[in-house]
Image (cartoon, rainbow, N blue to C red):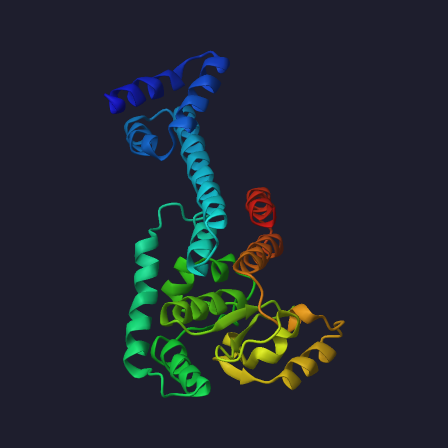
Length: 288
């Protein structure tokens, strides 16, 4: 019965009255993802370009609304698993991607690493194993040839091409670490994005959080291990004013904000400003 109702509503998109078309469009938008299969069938069965365009607009708006709702739900439920947040951002451009597929790729890496890791290893030894599998075996690396490509920010493309930017490579690293139960967190360092390995057995005063960090990891440089001195030097080199946030873990929401801002910059750099308003809507959701 539901499919017949949706088909009947779609048929009204051919009405010459613009107000009727607007009401029909709003009704279909409220139906959400359940209307998409019938909308796609209608698109395939008509040769009328005007109707096809209306159908495309509705499908795209439903998909975008779904991505926004998913992102909002992720935030409301604690924003715990970074891969989910990044996946919902990827839905902005690739609405048909499946979380199970992307999460499955991360799970493959986790299983390979899990066999090699045990509690008798030091934090540094564990990170060396992570680095070996992520960067040598699975061959994730920086995209030097096309740094500003938006594809560097979309997880499905990063997993497909094994190429990314500082933030997307860090998200892959964080997702694997999360599944392994390792105390590795993102650090919102400007002009790069690094990770911190915290001393999980010696957590001190939150106001002195930097003292709990054993070392830093740079996913954009094959997981190179850094100390505080290297961060100090980088900040001086980049002529930045030192801030505590450059040294201590940030939230998963902060990471997604950084990811979306990178996308906005990428689309501006390649001359595709029409993508920016939608991304700013996502940014408003995460920043609220």
